[in-house]
Image (cartoon, rainbow, N blue to C red; front, side, top):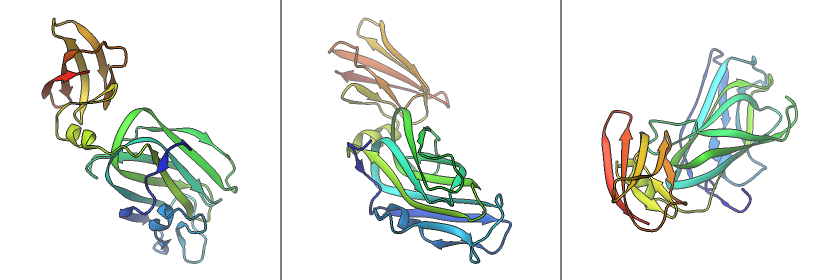
Length: 231
């Protein structure tokens, strides 16, 4: 992902919280430190005394990228006080989040060493809001995150915004589908199926010949959206 830009630097934190059975647990330094591009600052959550029980808190924050981007990968740079149970999810509306990223690499399995976790999408995803949510600390020393880096090619999305509104759009060799699509089919003008996909935000038409086609998308609530596209 090094060929892409870090979309999170200098953006804003819209939600930040910690829930704990220990009233002494608090956010000691803001999550804005995790998106400033500076490895000398950090998001820190722990007891003021510096010691907390290993499983007593849920801590999270959400980054607003300011626009909807195509996201290629996300990297979390942890200090030794890290999370061993956390998710990274994306959303277009800051309400419905999807855990569509999988861990591709961990630089260390140790509970005391700093590590870098790389998340990649198993298919193209578009998102504006990125949420990191930790449910279990890896040690008794709380959480310390140096950076949450969100990588993409900088392509914004009028495309993804259109998809969120329930329409269909072509971006290169991808058909961007309405949010909530569970099944999509591309037909040629003779009615033959040329592409089909299920449970995805985008559908590849890389192998489809140039021409005019009709896309039918079925959403989870049964709504059917159709559109004529040109490749």
